[in-house]
Amino acid sequence: ILQNFPDVRTKWQRKMNYVMVDEVQDCNARDWEIYETLSALHGNLFLVGDPDQTIYEWRGAYLEIFLQCKPQTDIIMAQNYRSASTILDAANSIIEHNDMRIPKDLFTQNNIGDVITHFHGKDDRQEADWISKQINSMQERGAEYSDFAVLVRSAYLTRAIEQSFMRNKISYVI
Image (cartoon, rainbow, N blue to C red; front, side, top):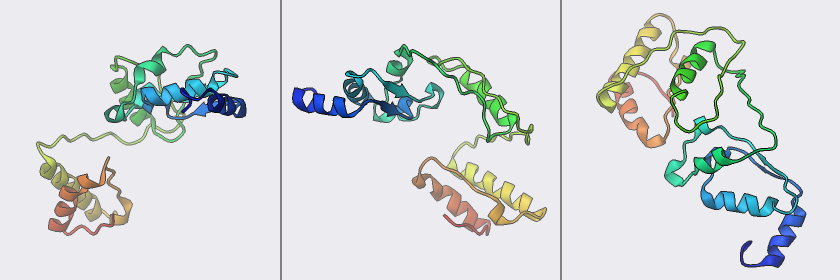
């Protein structure tokens, strides 16, 4: 509509003095076309994003467009207020290898935090059983089941974990 009906395009461009887009690293080419069209009259396009956090390539997110942007002002927000420095050090050591990125070094003034434990199971059952073992071990030392949370990218990934929790008599809520 914006491309084929100039009167509609002009109406919306006049209404939008500013166009602000958050999580722009996850936008596809069509999204970019819309933002650029709507902001063309006033030239006030405000983008927020982090190329190191793109997760929607499967839906056509087009990171290259974001990285090719030539902003009037570039603000790097590298200080993290939530994570311990151990987490940020691990993240920095991984993301520094990304081919397409805006260089930055994440930091925090928070405490160091606990040591990171990494386990890579040969399959989802082995991974789920390892999680159960860790929870039961900590529970035996006084932790409550309510002290734990298992985060997954998508709900369908919980099946092996639920089955392991049932086998290991771990009380849980989804």
